[in-house]
Image (tube, rainbow, N blue to C red; front, side):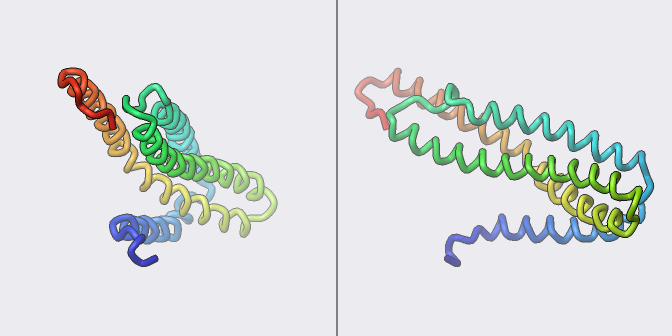
Length: 166
């Protein structure tokens, strides 16, 4: 069990958690009754959600799978499914942030204390989601690099006869 823990991912998570807690606790007074700031968060996460839908569609398209045997496709399917699960979680965080903002706006009219608690929650969640969104360009670069590598390998196999098709 301990061997399966990715230290780099754990450190990144702890970093994101620490920053998000700090931003939520310090930022809530700044966002309370600040319609402009709330609109910025809504706009940013709406755009990120749309962008992420495009990423999911592109990265999950079977037409872009590496050429080769069914075994190659099976291995690649597992990698793609893992990536898609991570993107789905991020997309859910985007939508949950937007949902919490909506609920805080509704609740704020009748219960200021509950609205403040929801503001803490959506600031925390939006911070976590935004920090993890910073990894999206690297993800896109890896996807494209994998496709380029697969194309080079396919051309290499075509140029060198009798090469096994793994």
